[in-house]
Length: 197
Image (tube, rainbow, N blue to C red):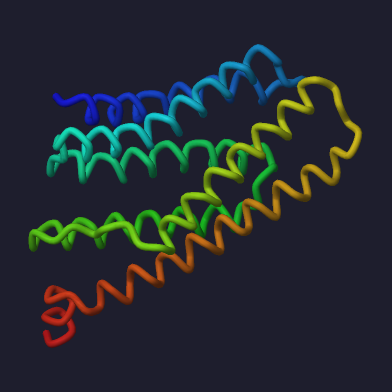
């Protein structure tokens, strides 16, 4: 297994660890500061590995078919995990989570269909914008929880409002990104053949 693929697999392994830590850190009567530190470490390692695996693969000519499939899947597993955590504790609106879940499942389906005909779904502008909003909203969500764990309740209402706006922007950007990919999908030979049938 190449180093980029090892980084991708590592990101997938970190996702359930993040979830378990989140449950023990946030679900109690008070938010544990040590748990928040661990969540920050996992979050940062996941995001850095997401950048590194693609960079190393391209720079050292280690791009593989398996890596092309695993990398976006690892991204979905990682980010959906922390969005579910935030929604479960009321920090993220549930409807925003559902839009993101629907988008990710639909994109996975499109990727599978295109992979069958040997076509890769390359990242587009909308997908990159969506990834930025996913990252910012996830980091800010952890920041809000960290402030709570420190007992800093000043401006907490405003911080929660900002985090919810960021989650909503993440959901909207994911929807716009899906529309961009879906319009491209409509132009593929597979979809043209399906429409004719």
